[in-house]
Structures are given as C-alpha cells and as structure tokens.
Image (cartoon, rainbow, N blue to C red; front, side):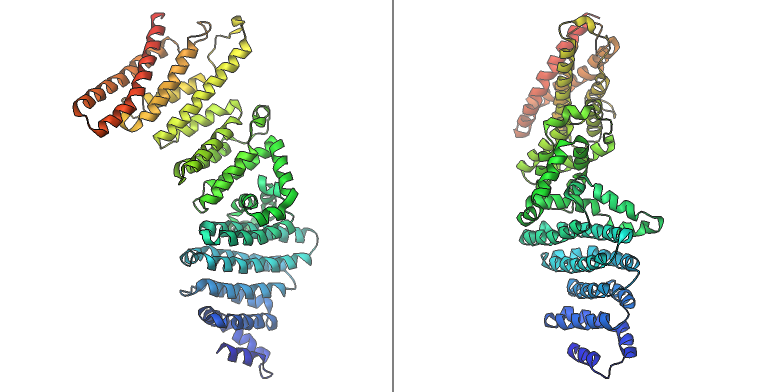
Length: 533
C-alpha cells in the first residue's frame, strides 16, 4: 500500500493541489503503518520526505508537529522516529524566520520524547536509543541552519541548539539505567556533546553551569518564558556531560586535554570550584539517573574538592549562599541513605565531609545545624553530630593556638559557635515534643549528642573561669532537664532488660551500654562544675 502511495505521488499525473491535500491527511497513517511493519519504515520515511520537499516546509512543520501529539499504542517510538526524520528533512528546507520555526518545533519534540520514555523502558531501552538518535538528526538540521546565519541571530539559534542538546543528554541519561544499553547511550551523548562544542559551549562552562546560564539569559525575553520551560533539565545535562566524559572512553578521548584543563582550572579557583560543586546537586538529588552515573559524579566531586581550598575559601567575599551549600549537601545525603552498596555510601560520606570542610568556618556551624534540624533519620543525625564534634575540636585547637600560653588575652566571651552546639545537644536530649528521647529508636543520635556534650564540658573546664560556655543557669538546666531525666530512662530500660532477657533485649543492652557510660561521665563533669557555683 505504501509503495502504491509513493508511486502515485511520484507519477506525472500527481499535481501540486493533490500533494498539498494529501500532505494534510497522510503523514499520520503513513507513519503508523511504517511503525507497525518494520520492512515498510524506509518507504514511509521516503513518502514523508517527499511531502517535505514538494510542499510548503512551514505547513509541513505544523502538520508533523500535530502528528507527533497523536497517541499511538503500538510501536509508538518507531512512529515518532519516522516523524522526527521527516521534521529534520523539513527544517533544512526552511528559508526564512528560522528561529521562529525552531521555537515551534522543539517544544513539541521534547514534550513527546519525555512522555514516551516509559514505553521505551518496557522495551529494555533500545527503542529509546533510536528515538534520541532521531532527535539528534533534528539537532543536526538546526546546526545546518546556524551555519547560514550571522551575528546575534546565529548566537541566539546556537543557544537554543545547545539547550536542546543538554535537555536530550539529560533524557537519554535517564535511560542508561539499563546496563545493556549504557555504552550505546554514551555514544549518543557523545554526538550531542559535539553539537555543544559547535555552539560554543566549553567544558569549563559546563562544569560551572555558566554556559547554561549564559544561553538562557540570551533567550530570557518576556515572550520566551514558556519556550525556556522545555529545557527544564538543561542544568542536569550540563553536569551529566562532564560525568559521561569522565566515565565513557570515547567521550574522554574526544574531550582530550580541554577537559583536563577545565578540571585543573576549577581545582585552582575556589569560586569556580563552588560553582562546580553546586552543579552536582542536579544529578545526585534526582531519581532519574542510574547509580553508576551517581557514583562517577561522586568520584568527580572528590577529585575537584580537596583540602587545598579550605583556608583560601574563608577569605573570599563572593561565596555561594547557604541555601546552595545546603542543597548540594542534602543531595549527597540522599545517596548516603539510598545507595544500594556500602562502598558507594562510604564514598558519599567522604564527599559530604570534604564539602563541609571547605565551607567557611563562619557558615559551617549554620550549615550543620540546618542539616541536623532537617534530618529524618537517627543514624544520619548521629553522623552529623559527630561532624559537629570534630568541628568543635578543631575550633577549640585553633583558639588555643591563637591564645598560646598568654591566657590573659581571653576575652571572657563564649565562642560564637557555643550557643548553636548547645542548641543541637538540647534538640536531641530534650526533644521539642517534650520528655527525654526514646532510646529504643534514637540511641545512636543520643550517644553522639552525649559525646558532643562531654567534649564541651571538658573544653569548658579549661582556661579562665570568666570564659565559660555554660553559665550557672545553663549548667543547672543541663543537669536537671537533660541528664537526670535521661538517666531515669536508662535505669528503667536496664531494669526491664534484666527481667525479660532474650535476643532483642541483648541487642538493646549492647546499644544501651555506651550511652550509659558517656551519660555517667557527663553527669560527673556537670556535678564537678556545680560544686564551684
């Protein structure tokens, strides 16, 4: 049937009026039939390309975009591939108002591709590769358009093409969860990366996200607001390009020395480094990407963030706001909590510590406090409290170095972090909902809070009496409102365990013993301080 249609269209008896009329009706059924019958796909493409060549290109764009929105239950991705090939052939034939036509076509393309990814999952992802390869041909057609343009119009179209490539890189990366097509997805990403380089994007600009910001700024006119919505994953795509470059051999070879140079420039510049750190939150916080991609993201993050920058960062004025730092740390936390294997969880914890270590000391306690207050997992809260303890120890040693042996230089004021740390201890030992904490569910964080309190009490017992973190009223509150109620709970649980026995009780006893030891030591330290009141 399709061959007969093509024969009619190619015959001398076919006139322009007939072709124009048929072009309105035939693209949908031709693409559907070609998708259902694999041996007819080439002839289906030929018919649609014939319409594109012999009818108004602008009309064909509208017709094919409308066909894209038609739901197809069977072989939907193959149907879209045929139409996308037709759109690519049509775009090349556009003679004027290129940008306006592209702005009509791309939202329709990206919308249906995103919607059809679920169907591709059921087909083990291979149809997704075909779909993104067809979308790549759309990009190649726009690239040919760019070559014919000059000045700011070319810059604008290149920005659009770059954002389109990044959006597709993000979408195809979500399909790489299928191990059997991961390498093929990398090859598709490589082709999109070549479009990015043509558009003037650089690995440095992708690492920091600045190239994406620059491209969106060029398009951020009032009338383009809705258009920019179709590139909602562009920042994901920018981060994914550098991740794929580090994990895929062909992409690494293509990037060559330019990628290594970009990494070194980011490592050597703290502001660029923080811009790059901030970019990783898009991949690490998303559920769309595979654990393999997230693992390589952590490797790259650990490569970029080292100890060389910590002191230098403290002196910088132009530093990212706390919300940005909080966002990347929460993204790393998600990997710590949900990663399927121990090695990856350890890697995420290393990344968390490394990022926190380069946060300026003036913001570090604020960030840790925010993380603890927003933590929903007792084990994670315990880890974060241990990090706070390490920071307290570091700040205490730093203060000792400053004061040296001349204690007369003590100002008599508590360190700026003291009130925050005590608030965190109180949050655990005297929860806002009232009463002592539930040890059966929160023993880890209670133990960490007690260890932190013990450190504060030890530090507070040194130096001049005028420089105390725990004033008279506070020390009495710690004793009567934090420690004594907790001791009553520990004593009660211990009595129950002695009566009941059993495996569960033995496990609880193992959790309770370290809590009891540290609690008693804290009580001893407080009672010693109270003798001098």
